[in-house]
Structure formats: C-alpha cells, structure tokens
Length: 595
Image (cartoon, rainbow, N blue to C red):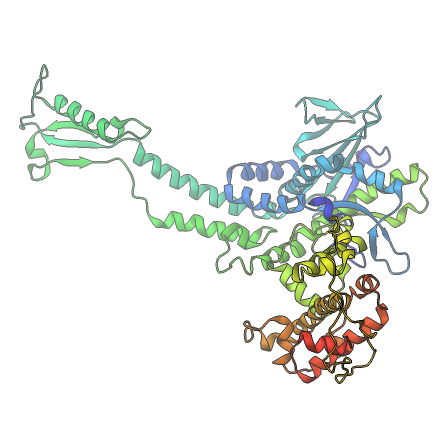
C-alpha cells in the first residue's frame, strides 16, 4: 500500500518552506570536519547516561519508539521549490534527481529502519551520524549506515567508527562520507540537545523508586521467615522417621510441593521450623516471624508521579506515556495528528534539510544538474495520521459537489492505474442496466457485447403495426389508428431503462446534497433518490444536479440518440421532479421522453 501514496501530494508539507533547519556538518570535509568535531566535545557523558535510561526505563523506551515508528512510515522523496512562491511542489520529474533521492538512507527497502534509528538517536542523544560508504567495484548504490554518538570517535586526526556489521572499530577511508546531524542546544549551538537530557534527574528518580520497590519485593521473596513452635509439643511420627520437629517440617514441605506446581522451589514457601521453650513464645502459641518489609503505596505513587513528570518533560505527547486517559478511538486520531504536527513534522523537516544540504545538492552539482538549489528532500506523511470514517466524510463532500473525483481518489490513496477507463465505466453501467432490466439483453444486444458475453439469438418478434417516430414534444393525447395508446418498441424500452438509471443517480446525488446536518437521522427510512420529496429545497437545482448525467455520453450512442438531446431531457425531468417535490415514476419518464 505504501506505493499508492508516492504520487500523492505530501500531507502538511511546509508551504512555503519553513526556516526551521537542522544543524548538519560533513566530518569528511577537509575544511570543517575536524573543527566541527572538536566543537562538539563534552557531549559523551550525558549521552551515555541517557542511553542507559533508554535501556532500563521501559516507559521511556516505549514512548520514544512510538515516535520512531511514526517517522519510519514517512515516505522520502525529492521535490522542487517554486522560485516565485517558495512552496514545495509535487515530486520532481527530473530522472537524475529521482535516481539520487531513491538511494538515500539505503533505498526504499532499508529506509524505514534507518528513519526509525535516526529518530531514536535524535530523541535520546540529540545527534546522529550518517555514514555513506561507496560500494567499490560494483554498480550497486552506496551503503548507508546510521551511527549513534557513542559509535564514532577520533584519535590523532583520524575518525573511527564501530562497523554496524562486524562490530569492529574501523577507520574512515578517504572515500567514506561521515555526516553529523544534531539538534543544536540553544545556549551552545555546536552541542547537541534533547528533551531526555533535561529529564535525567526525573529518570533517576523513577529508577530509584523502582529499585526501592524491587528491594522490598526481594525481601519478601528471600524466604518465608521463621515459624516458632513450642518444643514441648509432640509431633506426628511417620514410618522410619522420628516424631520431631524436622520430621514435621519435611511433612509440611512435601504437602506444599504437592499443591504448588508453579515454577520455583516449594521449600521457599515453607518457613523454617524453630523449636523454642514455650515460655519464650507469646501466649505459648505458634508464632511466624518474617524478614520482609512493609510495601507501602508511597513509593509506588512516587514512581507514578515521576512517570507523569517525565511525560511532561519529554518532547512527546504525554498521552503516549501515561495512556489515553479520557480519550477513545473516536478522538485518538486527534492526538495522532497533534503528535505529527508538533513532534514529528519538525523532526522530518530537520532531517530533510540535513539530507538536502549535505548530500542531495552536492551530488547534483557533481552530476552537473542545473539549479540544484531548487531540489529538496521532503517527506510524504499520508500513512502517519489516519482519521476514522474518512470514506464517509469524503463521500459526503463528494455528494455535495465540494471535491472532485481526482481529489477523492487521491485522499483515499487510490493509484492512477486503478482509475477506470471509459471502457470499464461503460461495462459497469451495462452490467447495472442488465441487472435491473434483464429484458434489455434481447432488445439491446450491444449491452451483451459490452459486458463480454456472446449475444443470444434474438427470438422472432411478433408482427406489430409500425409505430410512428417519437416526437420531441410530450403529447399525452397521441393514439393509434384504432384509438388505443401506442405501445413502445423494445428499443424504446431500453432507452427508458437506461434513462431511469441515470435519473436515479442524479436524484440520489441531489438527495445527498440536501441531507444537511439538520436533517440527518430524520429520514433514514427514505431512499436517497426520494429525499427531495421531503426536504425543503434551499439551493438552486443546478447545484443539486452538478456532476450528474456523466454516463449520458456513453449510453446515448448505443441507443441511437443524441447525447445533448438526452441530457437536456433528463435534466429537465429531474429539475421538474425536485421543484415540484414529486417522486420519480417510470411512466412519467416515458411520457417525458415522448416515447
């Protein structure tokens, strides 16, 4: 399905292009590479702490992965900037630019994983390194790797990186390109910044609360405690075993092992039996001493409070970490849309700017592409945000004549190749006509040919007196020579049946447009093509019928009538019905057509 969206206009692409840009530098550049690296020194310590919390705090991990998964769905492509307006156009038609853009981040197959990894590095450490390694001796595109800040180091003027495949530290070769992309700290913009950095004290608080809870649980699980029993008691004896406290303990343990079949040692659930003088035991009764500490709700609430604070501090929607709360599946899309606009879109814009300035445009200059500055990397985000009942909403807008066929197909993600041809449309109409009026098979063999069946042998028609040619005016008083009304021919019946389907379509469109919000739910029992008989007309009939009669051009030639004449007749018929609030009647239509 992802390929369906490639031709679509990007969703929420900054138009005109916003000035929000990423900080990016090629460390392979002899002029600025080493200076750019030295300017970032001092980042490692807080980044290592942040990554440790990413690995150990599940709520942090899950929330950041949620954003990473959203970014991985964005579809990267190359577009052009309009020189006059500064807006981003559709995907460029330049084959060279398309070919270069198609290799970025490893191509379509590897790109989703790369985008997710870039996002996680950006959210945790505030920076990410992109390694572009040429594939020597082959026609294959360059290899792209995403490296974290802890996987790149410099020693003696030579950059080294942890090879993602072998795990070995590897020197950066002369042909390799290493790009640093970072979110600049507002105070020291050569350094990276992230929301996790400022949340480290909160993460430490959550970690300590979790450790406290675990230690309390461990103290409960360390043992079952001590069971004090008076030593003056007599214990039951068993075969070959004395009647002492140890025998009694063994008997209890075997009983526990028989009833506890869950993982773990049953002996851990049975306390140690310790005989003691009765006067040392309270009231000379059994007494159970445990080593566990009381597990109060204060520590748990402290951790929950820390998680809520963390959700407020991170650059993610709080609902993702704390749960949807009062939200339901009906308004969850609003949270997703807000997440995209506030959290995902800026990240994609920065990434697109970084890839444009450090890779796309320099490569285009090398290839001799004219005006490389007019091409940029941007993202189509149609798959990130999905609204419920989108089809119903679009269908209502379509019925009201507010959107076109092309726009509706675009919003539903229907590819250009799925648009029906004129032949397909005619065939579908023919099938509908034959389904509603099977007798048309005999009277209109053209329909059978359009559908694709072999035309049946026509049955011999009974001899009938010749009928006069139908007039263009309605004449309800016309009669045959014997004084009876004329009977329509089979070809006329086919015209009536085809015209009736077109009328139903036009009246249904009009009814859908008249069914405004104030009338919804009141006329569920009335077919859409009859709604004009009960809902007051508030707009011009021409607006209600806009977009109707689209099949006239395909039907009229098959029936031997002029398309303009048939459309004029059907438009006038529907206009009369709507104006007079009358339902469609087949005989009335026949008279209107002067058959």
